[in-house]
Image (cartoon, rainbow, N blue to C red; front, side):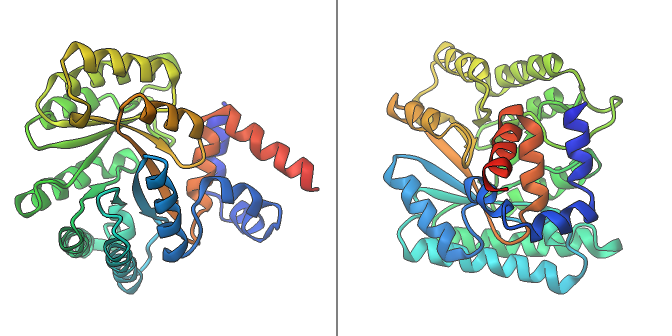
Amino acid sequence: MLRQVMLGVSRSSTVKDVAVRAPVTRHVVQRFVAGETAEEVVAATRTLADAGLLATIDHLGEDTTDRAQADAVAGAYADLLTRLGAAGLTRHAEVSVKLSALGLLLGPDGRRIARANAELICHAARNAGTTVTLDMEDHTLTDATLDVLRELRRDFPDTGAVLQAYLRRTEADCRDLAHAGSRVRLCKGAYAEPAGVAFTDPAEVDRSYVRCMKVLLAGEGYPMLATHDPRLVEIGRYLARDHRRSPDSYEFQMLYGIRPAEQERLAALGHQVRVYLPYGSDWYGYLVRRLAERPANLTFFARSLLSRS
């Protein structure tokens, strides 16, 4: 119930306006967001690289309302990739992109606009020596995102996909994408979805996640296991051993600011660990969904409010 309330709050423009203006919020944002500028996120990427961690960088923003805004987001990614290349960090970092931020929802031409902007980013990533992963959004955009992914992979076969274990369709999607050369990030999912398309019981979501891990780790692709759940991490490690996976044939992923000691522990054990590193001024929806995912995150937020009130 609390999670559903928080996800509702993430869509409230009224609450957003209050939160964005509140000085106390900045303290919380700094834990989960790597800054508002490209310079700040490049510096955070270097810090992660020095700690033996990889990064996938997300320029925050989903509610693109016009073509100019969508093109500006694509330009921001291209600029970031140039900066990462100049800093010698593209061996350690890629970018994650939401198609809605690139114009997917801009009417009848939205898909064409989003694909063109995604191609621009993929070209910039290739020139910089790194890759792009298409983030997944709510279930209404799943088919469109996977369609654009298939189109992009014709010219950019290393483009990554994201699948969400709480969707009932995802095990089948994993089977479709568990082929050689296919990079797939598996996460639980962070949007409010109807029971008809998604598992709503946390235990069911966990069981779905394990089924999907089994498919991906048994396949010929490159699984990216995005979870902070200690049980699922250990199951993932066991399955990787069971399928004789070499350390460079899969990776774990975790969010910036969540379980950083665990990220470093796994890296010290020889696992590849990639940190999802968001930046930008449009942080509100991202932050609230992160708080909704884990009660510990909400507790941290509440303690920050009390300590600075």
